[in-house]
Image (cartoon, rainbow, N blue to C red; front, side, top):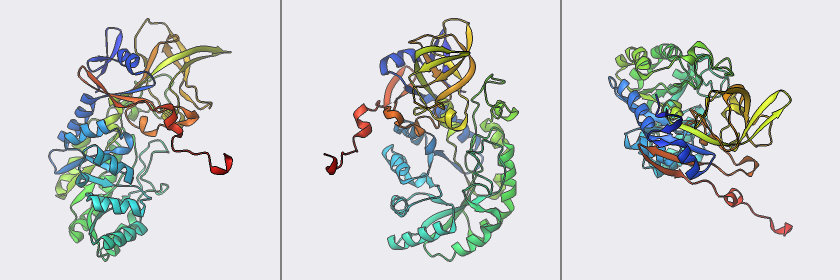
Length: 432
């Protein structure tokens, strides 16, 4: 469910015409719906209401300050993976006491920052990390709250680049090693064993892998809970969204699987997992990102040229892989629709950007409405891992971002000035 829809022939975000926003703020342009963000958080929060819980939004999916403030105002916590993301939470008015810090390569400076700010817990990925946190906490005369990330070796059946829960991945500590790790960690005087965490992958559209992983971890968790008086169990994030309409032509096969065509609702998620989790008597943490922000955003782009080369038709747009890298990086599917519908004629085309790479594309050979120079297209479901993964490759400035609420629209990030791209660079003295 999201608040992008056609009113007559024009695409709207809530109560505002998308074409009006594109003409006002320029393109490429990210547009976010505040109501969609709010509703997705609230639906998940309500579904988990039968157990003590905390929803921690995964900042890596979308770190815009207005997005974060929207969620912080709702009482949302945050899942962070760097010191910079912690500083973003603080800048947005978020509560560090509701932050969990994940990631396999936490630096000493990041650990010290998190301890000084008073985060809720570190999600620890290795024994050397436990030793480092203990050492820094001792120097600061603090006790660090930690939860070890267990790798349950459960295959999530998602894209190979976003699976995290098997022994082929860099994340967490093997299931069979966890009890010994906790026993050794208990002897480190500046650590508090606060919980246990797991995360098996991203863009899961079936609850079955979650349930399989929880069932596998439960016996281990009960022993750890009783032995170390644990406070919480984090079941991670990974709740997926539907990018491709059912049987969408041109979608990669793994997007077209039966699972990818089903909608994983908060109600279905909770109905399957809460009977397993409620008897634990622990606080349950979840760390969704895409589920909250993915369908809350679109990327709007202007058609620059329509080109035919041999048998191929190309729609060349002003957005590119530097603005939205998911298709180039993951072969990910995004539905592409006209901002203003002008007829039913369709033709197969590649939608491509201007970056000097053959991999700079948004779709291949997809039936699309006929468009011409100056028309606008919207790439849907771009609110997660869109702007967050953007770059200035080819010296292309970062896009602007706009937040909409009802009939209000405001810039949430200015378009990057061209000269800012190289503002930190210098011509070294011996070249002058």
